[in-house]
Every structure is written in C-alpha cells, then in structure tokens.
Amino acid sequence: MPVSLRLPEDLKKRVEKLAEAQEVTPHGFMLAAIREKLAAEEARAAFHAEAKRRLQRMKRAGTGIPAEEVFEYLRQRAEGGRAKRPKPRKIV
Image 1 (tube, rainbow, N blue to C red):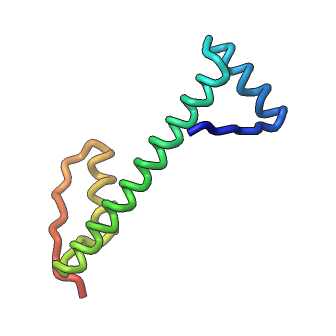
Image 2 (image 1 turned 90 degrees about the horizontal axis):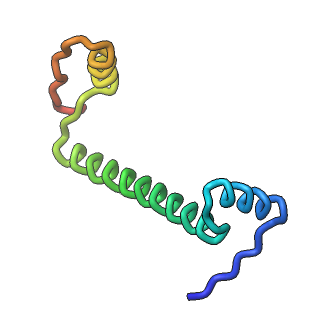
Image 3 (image 1 turned 180 degrees about the vertical axis):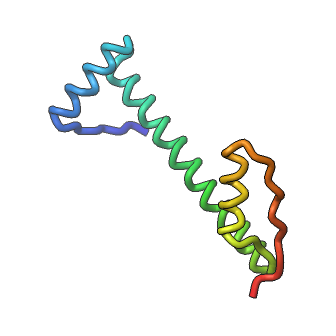
C-alpha cells in the first residue's frame, strides 16, 4: 500500500539532519520512528487491556489489596528492606 506523507519543511530538515548523523536514509529513519511508535502504542494498549482484565477479575472475586498497602510494600522494597507481602481481602 503506497503512502505519501507531506512533511512541513522544518520537520523534513530535522529528519534529514538526524538521518545523516545516524548514517541512514531519511526514509529509513522515518520507518524506524514509525516502528518505534507502533511498538510503544501496542505495548500501551496491551497494558491497558491487561489492567481491565485484572480489574474485572478482582471485581468478580470480590477481593483486593488497598492501594496504601501496596505502596507501602513497594516503598519498603525499594528502600532495600524486607517487606511482608500484603494479602488480598474482601472488598466492601
């Protein structure tokens, strides 16, 4: 599928400058940029889909861990301390 993309002159010059510095063609540089953006957006979409699945599962099970407990656990771990894992409990 052929695609034509009109770039503003200032953007075109920036692409050319960086492409030359990386010893690739402007076309190759733009393809790489599009691939990177697609990968990032696909990862973001997968992350959100997983979050929705987990929220649905939590609601079905009726259990969860309060955010404050999760944050405290993570803070202790980040500081190198030994932290007791919080346990899920019934959500009211």
